[in-house]
Length: 220
Image 1 (spheres, rainbow, N blue to C red):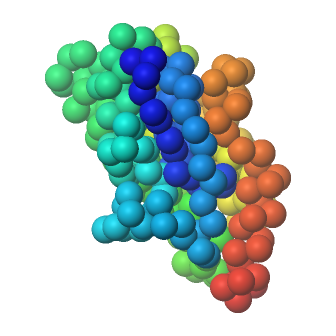
Image 2 (image 1 turned 60 degrees about the vertical axis):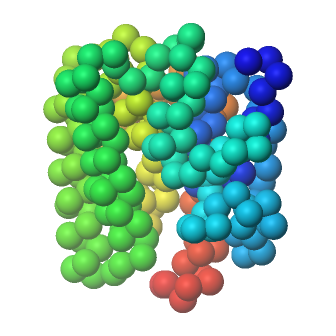
Image 3 (image 1 turned 180 degrees about the horizontal axis):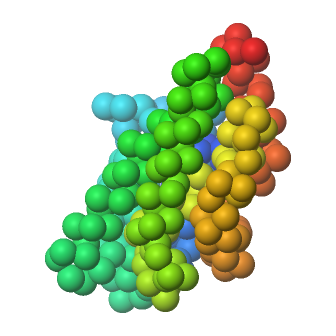
């Protein structure tokens, strides 16, 4: 597919965008990166995602694919000759989709509450966040990656949030590694892969971005 035109409409701190970047890197797909200003969305973004008007959007030969997990599945299906991301077994595929959905419903939502809420709401979010990570530790078991010996769909869904862990910890005043050492060891193992380290953003930069958002929204 050497003649393919692939463009990723993205915003640098987005863990959802990082998923697409990581999936493309794992597949060795060359693409054009287009940074979006979400305060002034481009005509291309509005044209390619008129329903949600959100990033990331993968534009493949002029056709848009939206929503990060759908993008990762699409990448896996189109560039299927290298580095399969989803298992071939239907049951295992279903399990992978379950845990990726769990990341969206728990890790993302609870992480957001940690920096947008205060007091009892924040404390409850921190507890649920740690409990959710512990459940994922149990699913990981003794495997190096959720995908087994290689990075797979669940890894791509989860590991971008490691870029946000420092912000969650610093703002929420808690330590993820103290509670979930296996999860942090797993994230660091993923980062040893060049595809991961290049796709993920610097946690300090993400933290500074979150502080800017908190100031903008009047969260103290």
